[in-house]
Length: 249
Ligand code: AMP
Image 1 (spheres, rainbow, N blue to C red):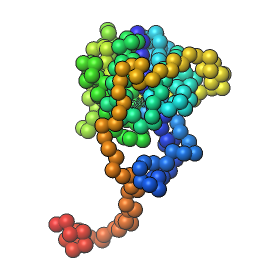
Image 2: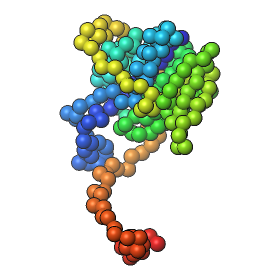
Image 3: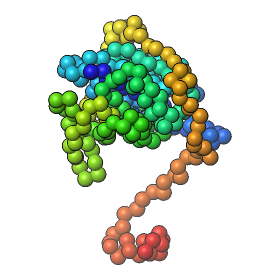
Image 4: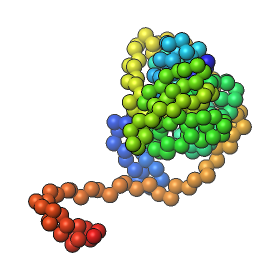
């Protein structure tokens, strides 16, 4: 079976985010960009399925500016077989991404799409769910363990109360959580090999998808600086502070 892994280019998770002076978004000029960390986990899982003989081909897809090729190359260096780049603005909304992925799914016919549970730039946590709805597929979100079983998959999910295991029939969309696996490091020989792997480039219009924005960002601001906390000596003091300082009771 083919496995499709959408990988997003985002500001590296180690970078301290700065808001642009005009409050239209966050600064991305001269900022280190990397693959969304959850997508690395998704790529790792897809490659493990291939190594186990379950998957026949792993395709990495990115929607974004031309530099998203680097993100696809990272997936190829990890072990994905080929890439697809849909060249578009950096901030295509989750619904448009899901529509583009649907068009690619219809072309490629994968039985499994493994996505990150969320992209750490917009923190939307929407794309996988929207894709499964558009396809009419089952979805399993926040996966921390997966096991193939006769054309279906047992997925252990991280839910509020702990863990829950569900069985989804394939084709399905699965979104991955942090504990699913530890992504491998890419070795230099594999980076060299990845340079020879093919990447198809296309535009949203080639897939018949309109990526015009449906959402309007009014402004982006820094979160308020946190006030320092304080320890109280007794329950009585706590109640007094809640009443008279915080005025919440
Ligand atoms: P989100 O719904 O934006 O939090 O993203 C959830 C997941 O959808 C990510 O972890 C990626 O696997 C995928 N995704 C979202 N946006 C893109 C994009 N522009 N290109 C490729 N994959 C994406």
